[in-house]
Image (tube, rainbow, N blue to C red; front, top):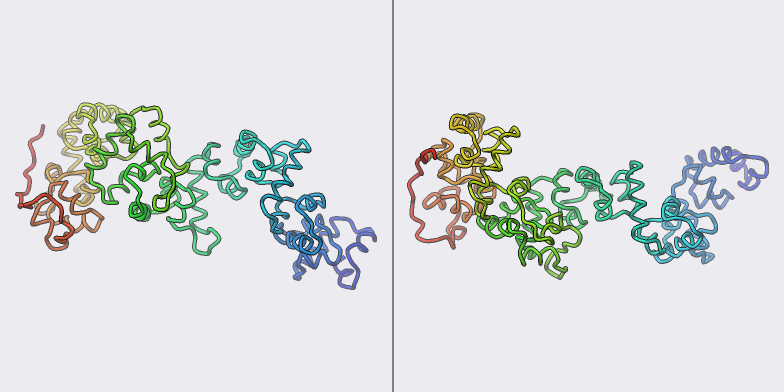
Length: 457
């Protein structure tokens, strides 16, 4: 057949000569491999069915329709009548209202939302065509049950909000974002700020492989644009990101976590519902389960705060008692949490003792972590340990003092270091903070002797 076309015959003549669809497609496939464009294939008489069978894409066939649209004024509804698929009509450049009109005709004919979707109409077009939100949402639920991935669902027009409502989990949406991070069609992959602007939540960014410094960097930018402490939490930034943004553990504990403990506050409620404006980033549908919890004024438990990434110091500042922290730690100890793991979560000696760990187990945990290479910088990360607590862990005064440049390099501010018990001259020593950075701290910044290990409670 390909030879016939090459000899001057057209596709109609080949068809009349008895060539079957499979033969027409095979011949056209050869011609396509030789560079025959879809528009040229149409010129020599090939139809849409043959072109699809030969491997031409909707975008290529859309070019044929685009020519008809320009030359003959073919509408989207007429293109549908001619047998073009929604993907081909869309590729031809028809505007959304025309595609929605074509989809509404499908609805008027009595076809279901799922049948219209299977024809190639996208969710937004189905809604504009008159299908209900419940009908369209049910389509995605069916597709998910049938194994449609979040990546493929998103490519077919389902939004992140719809994916979450349909039950796609953190790992599945993270996989979607991971693919965009590697290649979003721009040649460079989606950057962290683009991911945020696209509506992805920080936990999904972390799941996709963005690093904590990248995610914290985005929070710093958003804070500069006016994002508040409450908003940062609402959209899913972890306490660690918030601390590295420069908030002290007192601010995190007394302002944010306290309000979560008592079931929300006016500031938090406003953060969840605030409308976008020229300076403040749009929160939209990104509010996590936190927002639903606040709407019922149900306060957080110790376990929920701990699971959300808040450290025991922040939890104490939020108003939980040592007994409440100890009770939660007791449950986790009985569930298998080792003393070392508890120390890494930020529990101090007093917490550990209240939680039922023995003195020998506590001292052994601290010794093992130090022997394993855990530095003062790591132990004090995110404000987990004060200088007094670091001394209780067995670190020397010299080790504690020498850690300040490392803490600064890790992103700790002078105010955060002061909160942990560091004073002059350490704060302004070599490699530490400038006098300008130290500005605003309570004066005088008198030197304090290195803390001696506190007696075991």
